Length: 112
Image (cartoon, rainbow, N blue to C red; front, top):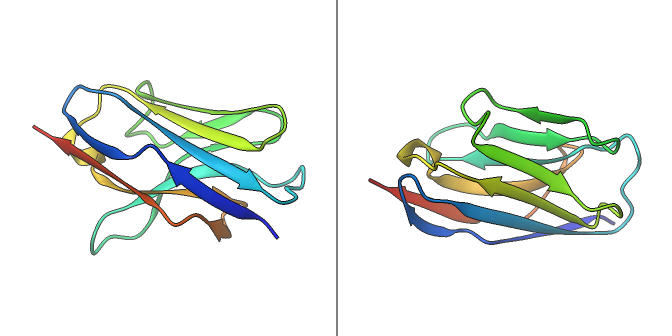
C-alpha cells in the first residue's frame, strides 16, 4: 500500500523560497504520476505540478517558471522547489500518487 508523508512547509515572506519534500513508500507503478496539489479553504484542490515515471513534468500556469518538481531515481522521494513565492501561493500542499493516494498535507503561508 502506497503511503505519502510531506514535510517542509512553513511561513515565508513574498519573494522567498521553500522546498517541500514527500517520502513515498510502497509500490508505484510506471503508469503512476507523482504530484503536488494545493487547497485553500472553500476551494477545490488544484494541481500544482506532476511528474511521470519518465520524468515528464507538468505545471499549473500560475507556478510555471517559479516552481520545480523533481523525484529521485527510485521514486521514493518527491520534491517541490518553490521560488518567488507570492501570497496567492498560501495553501495546504498535498503530495499525491496517481491522483488517488494523498499525504496528510503541509501548510505553506506567504505573507506580504
